Length: 167
Ligand code: HEM
Image 1 (tube, rainbow, N blue to C red):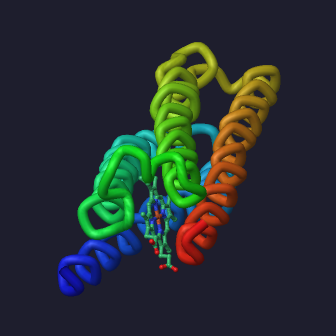
Image 2: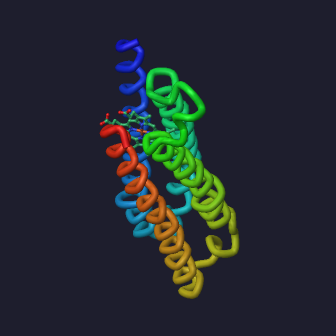
Image 3: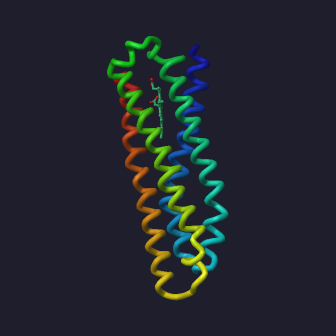
């Protein structure tokens, strides 16, 4: 059981690093750098990383949740249904719900906003200043939406610290 717990914890943490680290890198480095490129190269660049980024973040998130469930139940203290109503159980449920919300935010809000922006030919075809301003506005909106995820990550990490102390 100890070996299983160690392996599961390792898998959970490495996937969490990929999910959180990938999101942080995107919002702090990738998106601001792409937004500063000339209009013509922005779209091609953003299209290239967009799909791969979504695959990485969503796969990592699903694995974090899966390993988190196994950590709490199979090798953790949540062996019976009434344990769900202890502090540990409630914190664990809170983490699960927050992770689900984060995943939904990523897939349906941030990802969709990026997709819509990149496939809107009008805003990309023209070289007029009006559309250049519109592109800047759209990048700002996407970056702000992606920053929203950081608040969720902060909260989940707090829950992880509480779980460590059995709360
Ligand atoms: C961004 C998401 C997450 C991150 C960054 C994260 C990170 C971590 C870290 C670093 C630990 C090790 C804590 C320690 O032992 O001191 C941990 C443990 C754990 N995590 Fe997560 N986690 C995330 C999401 C989740 C979710 C969604 C669940 C619930 C389904 C979960 C359930 C657990 C459990 C049960 C443990 C073991 C706690 C214990 O009993 O010591 N985690 N997590």
